[in-house]
Image 1 (cartoon, rainbow, N blue to C red):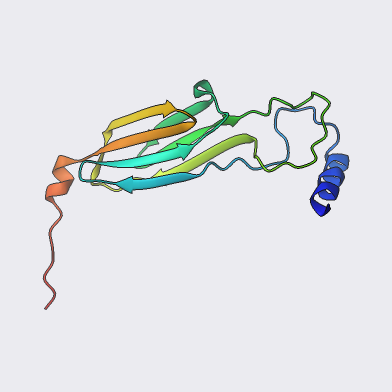
Image 2 (tube, helix red, strand yellow):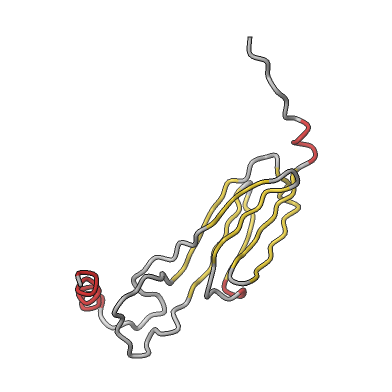
Length: 133
């Protein structure tokens, strides 16, 4: 009940929903894991079209950004409950040197963006165990 009241008050304060972005947060969940060959990033992006997302590398940072649109905006609906976030999103991940950012593969299927980054052959050789005395 309080959630519904809050939405009504925010609707009054913000005025009619005339823009594509509404009050809400779109911060997609992600998993990062590695295996012997690569670093894998899986991002949940249900309802986002492939054309609305962008993956880029800046220095050693992987940037995943895009827009999750609300198809009900300006359709005359009043939400009773709203748990999904809409709007622009951006996730930034610093990638360790032992992965080769020249060998990045991205695929989108069933609402999940999967990014694979191959291990760097050169950097892997630099790793050594240090004996503690």
